[in-house]
Amino acid sequence: MKIVADTHIPFLKGVFEPFADVVYLSGNEIGKRDVKDADALIVRTRTKCNDELLFGTKVKLIASATIGYDHIDIDYCTANGISWATAPGCNAAAVQQWVGAAIVKWIKSRERNPETLTLGVVGVGNVGQKVVELGRAFGMKVICCDPPRDEHENLPDFLSLEELLGIADIITFHVPLTKSGKYPTYHMLNETSLQLCKPNALFVNSSRGGVIDEGALLTFLRENPKADAAIDVWENEPNLLVELAKRAIVATPHIAGYSLEGKVMATKMAVEAVSRFFKLGLVDWWPNPNPLNEKFTIKGNIGLFDLIQKTYNIDADDIRSNSQLFEEFRNTYKYRRDFSAYIVSSCNVNNAILKRIGFQVL
Ligand SMILES: NC(=O)C1=CN([C@@H]2O[C@H](COP(=O)(O)OP(=O)(O)OC[C@H]3O[C@@H](n4cnc5c(N)ncnc54)[C@H](O)[C@@H]3O)[C@@H](O)[C@H]2O)C=CC1
Ligand SMILES: O=C(O)C(=O)[C@H](O)COP(=O)(O)O
Image (cartoon, rainbow, N blue to C red):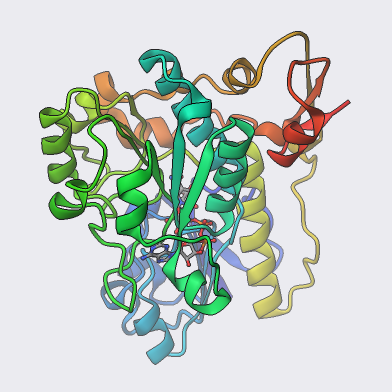
């Protein structure tokens, strides 16, 4: 058996060596010659799994250690009998933390009162639901838009995108990138839909570049000096639209999901998917030693904003002055810890609220 794996998936080395020849390569370097005789691929967002890579190979399984899967051509895989697996929800808490840190930065710099603000969450899946809880913890009014869920679950409080855009002070996207189907998300925020938005809104994108039309957003920001953007994902990664990055209040290199918890869970889910498929018996696998056993205590008289900033200094991930280092920054990232690693005591926030957004409470 042969496995080709992305070398930047942490904790993977050594796991499959007892069962297979394992070749590690940088995700964007994995090519047809490498995968021709591979049975399985273990990838991240950096490997485009399409006919160009897969045609004529004997790949039977693609396991992606990521939530998103727009890098996998699902139609091609289905038509060609290639199974695929992702890691749903693995780093949702990390993205929640990134969104929290971005919003706190914006509120402090624009001196906005959270209790007067409406948070609009577009896409209410694993990440979106955590962001809804965050907005409530901030004391904001929260409104949601998720037509695919609404259609099946009949959620009376959910709004259309157009309604949400007209009301929200903060608009945050948590949708997959899709170009077809009933509810495509490609450029869902564009020149036309931006006209519905408030001139002092904050636009937050930690979903995928391409969900927002970057050129249209840049024009809107130029025309509306009180509007802002916090962007983690870009249409042409690793290249970013430098003018947009410069105008944004937060510009990071696709690291919203980069917590240690998120990475461990992603690898765990990919390992277990490969093990299930090839019947290798790696059930309830964890890295050994498990780095998540280390926890941290935060004690003292602080409010929620400072608490979030204590867990994550988003400015340290700013890529504006070093945009050419986009991929290197990601590949050498020191994974941060998300809220679940922190045990909080005696701080000025209600314990139930802290627990709802993922902190541990003493
Ligand atoms: N920046 C980063 O590091 C990360 C980015 N992501 C991105 O975030 C996306 C969302 O992640 P999850 O919440 O875990 O996915 P999910 O699949 O749990 O939720 C996505 C939600 O979007 C909804 N949706 C689909 N089309 C929609 C539309 N046109 N309008 C409104 N809602 C729509 C779905 O019904 C679903 O409820 C991922 O697909 C991925 O691309 C995920 C993890 C890390
Ligand atoms: O999980 C996802 O989806 C993401 O976007 C990741 O956090 C980015 O993952 P990598 O491909 O950089 O591992």
